[in-house]
Length: 255
Ligand SMILES: *Cc1c(COP(=O)(O)O)cnc(C)c1O
Image (cartoon, rainbow, N blue to C red; front, side, top):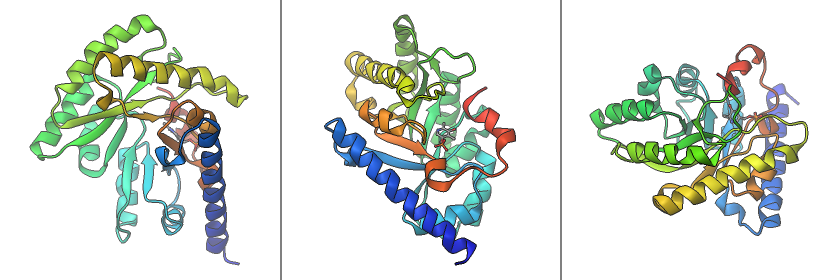
């Protein structure tokens, strides 16, 4: 068997396993797995890995770095129907790359970024769905709106009204990245908190802007689904370890 065949076999097997686990987690919480959308996180992976995932039926890729994504879009231009989701911290000066090439931003984390994106999108006469990244753990290294303490939710409420004034952004939900735990159960309180925040914002503003919850990675997606995730962002459990990615990995979850 060639290396490419082996890769294809592994990725297909992993997708099957992840889909089963999504199914189990959803049904254990009385949910339908149709409510859970899979984003395959491709940062640091080669064009071969991405095209193999495409062949295996994956159409939604999650990326953290705009420039890296541009290269992959060029590599994969022969493939139709790929959606690129931005899941990492977005610097304002790269907003244009995202406005032009991505179909959803999971990680909107400031009003100023919202305004910048909105302006670029309005020039292009298009709209982009976004989620608000929220820091529900209080870890200083994390991006996102401070939201670990309910006292902070009023501030967030005010910022949400400002985001809603950006007419070319379509607010669809919330996203979070919990702290890393050895034990998967350690993450549950953070997913619960994001769910509670969604309930709060739905009550105070309108449920239509908070339908989606993007939470759960390879390490903890089963728990995230039990706690209400509608998007899971899974990389390594499907594609295998990210080769030679340690140096940037530090930046992935943290400032
Ligand atoms: C890298 C990354 C993931 C995926 O992590 P895996 O361990 O590969 O599943 C999910 N979300 C964000 C924000 C990431 O940066």
